[in-house]
Image (cartoon, rainbow, N blue to C red; front, side, top):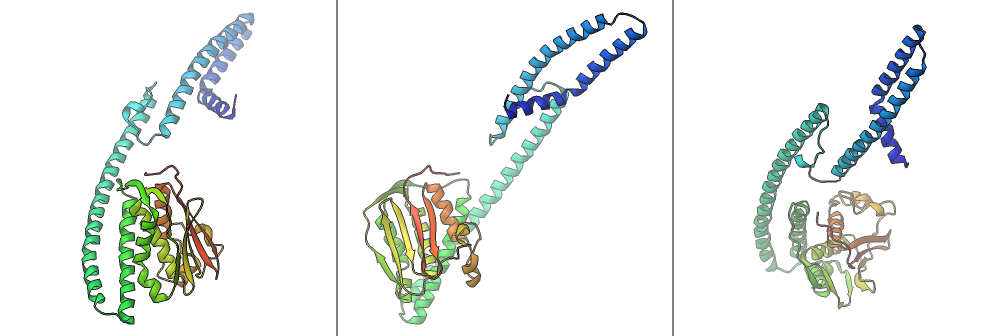
Length: 334
């Protein structure tokens, strides 16, 4: 008998110890009365043994029912939803009372879930509308800035790009926790996705005088193009943000891993294991108070859902390399 079954049998005996104690007590009483009446004790012994044998048979049968019910309830724990028909049949009024309590809790959970879904839906509608509304003045400001080409206007254009990025992060953050997704999984040209991201940050490369090292890649990746583009843009944005001079290199190694390597300030060794945690900014974030700790967290979650892996290798004052494994794993769309 393994440890789990031993524990279950012990719990069963513990639940029925009162009945066992009553049986022993009555046997002792009968024996004591026979002793006082100077009657032979052998009939009492025979009756006790027969009673113990009958009790053992009943005990084994009842324990099997107990074990089946326990295993049934254990299976319910792994289920997301519990409905009335899932519960085993109650064997007594106490079990019926427990089931009534559970049904009431389940009904309350359903009401709360429905209320939260409604609130989330309202919030999503508001922020989606807000994103589309805020894009109008952003586009207008970009048109105004395009008319001038000096250092001041280029700096304003870069700041406007950051605003656009934060707006996209808000929308991505909300959509990731939504009940529905807009994933479109298909074969995509990785080179075109990378070029879209590079084109978006071309002005920052020029303004900061950061050299881009990139050779076009010929690779088809099965993914969602829009979400993968978001990840690459976030990684490029971070690379540009923390690289004051030098270069940013984009390459694809033979194991289908996209590598984005910069010559920036790097990441402290104690911070490296936590950079994909929600809200974690580390030493660099404390230095740059504008860091939110959301960008890489979103990248990690998106990659997990797309079946990709993302990791970082870094050395302080040398640079950081973000590696995105594009080989297919099981996708998670929960």
